[in-house]
Length: 267
Image (spheres, rainbow, N blue to C red):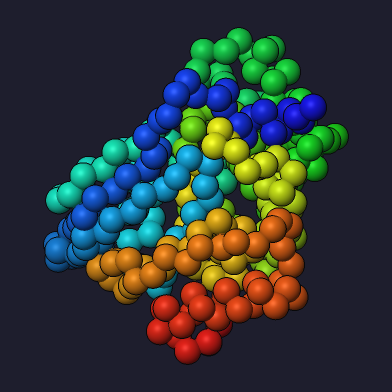
């Protein structure tokens, strides 16, 4: 029997064959800096993400990774090219929990916005707290939670949005190194348990500056160039989950990604 978390990660099976949930065709995007200069963020980026795939996007700082997620989520339009995406929700680097709400109500916020009554929204969110290692902290406010726990609450809120596409923008980037490693291991275990290889599971795009994180979590790694971001390489990851940092295949994949970035194996 699937767990409650698994059912949340896997929307009901679609009828018939659906299109790929994310298609970007030669997309370019530029914006004005505060100084008024034109900044090219992305240049002719083409990307297709299959249903249920977890794609990690890596690249240098400022290469347009966050812009790419905002395009997928429909938060800004492309200047050129075409974007066709299923409904998507964005989880930014900062958890953005509301300080006056407890953890349970923060997690249930997406359900409340969707129109669910408070009691039902709380009941739905509470059922997942144990699976996410949050059992016993339902009534805690954000300032009473560790950084890792806050990110788990934010991740749960993202899941409960019900959108078929999840866009995660460096979700662990603001955490200290030890907590970040713990959260990466936690998410790897969660994905291994809750994402069997079917075409009905959630589609995830993970933006990260951490190549090792991409190797640990992704089904495919997309490497972007320095600004303006262009696709340098796409690396398929045919490794079972959960993965460990000491796995030679993970290390080899990390080196391939670094080589594509032109970093010559440097971390």
